[in-house]
Length: 114
Length: 229
Ligand SMILES: [Zn+2]
Picture 1 (cartoon, each protein chain N blue to C red):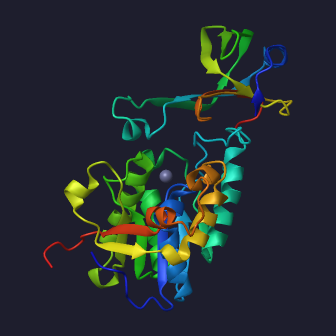
Picture 2 (cartoon, rainbow over the protein chains, first blue to last red; picture 1 turned 120 degrees about the horizontal axis):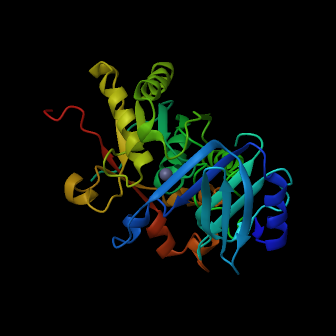
Picture 3 (cartoon, rainbow over the protein chains, first blue to last red; picture 1 turned 180 degrees about the vertical axis):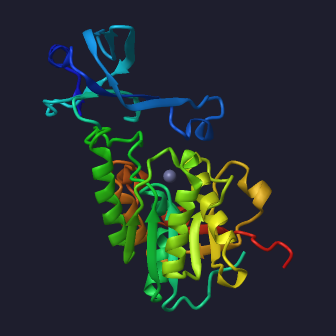
C-alpha cells in the first residue's frame, strides 16, 4: 500500500458516489492486545459486503486522515487512515496502520463483493 | 517431562491450526523431525488468516490481497518443513468460534476417518490466547472425543496463555529441535507478511547458543481424554 494522497483519494471517492457499493469497514486492536499488555482492552469489529450508497463524501485531515460518507439516512465514518492502494482503479481500499505497521482500521468500497 | 522417542516411522500425523503461521514457531521443528523419521504429515489449516493485522513492513499486502499472499506463504512454509499434504479448509479468519460446529466438526471428522492419524497436533482449548486457536482446539478435541477410544490418536497440544503452566503444569513433551532450526527458520521466514524474521535473529546466526536455546525447544501437553488412567 502507499501513503494516502489526499487529492487522489478524494477523486476516487467522487468516482464511486451515487452507486450501490459493497462496504468493508473494520477496526481492531488485535486479538493479542491484552495478552501482550494487560492494561490494553481488546476490541474489534468489522462488517463486510454490506450494500451502501452515498451521495456525498470526503477525506479530511493532515494525516492520519478521516473519511466521512453521507448516505440518504446515515453516515459512514473512519478515523486513523494512513494508506491506500493506488493501483486499484475500480475500488477504494483505505487502511490505517499503527507505528508497528499493524492494521488498525480499514474502509473499503467496491462495485463487486470483497 | 520426556523426550519424544516413539517410533514415528510411516506414522500418519494430522496438524490442525486455524492460521497460516501457527505452525511456524510452535511445531515446525517437531514436524521436520517426524518427517525425517518417515512420517506423513497432513496440515489442515482452517483459514487463510485474511483478517490478520500485519501487512508487511512497509505494507506490501492489503485486506484484499492478504489471503492470496498468506496462502503462498503457507505453501512455502510447508515446503520448508517438508509437509507432504496441505489442506486449506476455507473457513473465515476470526470467525471459528462462531462457525457452525456441525460443519466444522464434520470436516475434521472426515479428515480423521480418511487419514487415521496416530498423532494430532493442535491448540490446547482455553490456553491458546486467540479465540480462533481455542475454538480450533475445541473442535479437534470434540471430534476426537466422539471416536471410539481405540481409534483416538494422541493429541499433542500447544499452549501459551499467561496461566497455562499454572493450570496444566509442566509440558508433557519437550522436543529438542536444535537440529531442525534451518527448516524452522525457513518456515518462519516464509511468513514474511507476518514476521520480520531478520529482526528475530538480529545479527545472530542459527549456530548462536542463545538462538538455539530460544527456538530449539518445542513444548506440548497431551490432552487428557481419559483422566482415570
Ligand atoms: Zn494463530
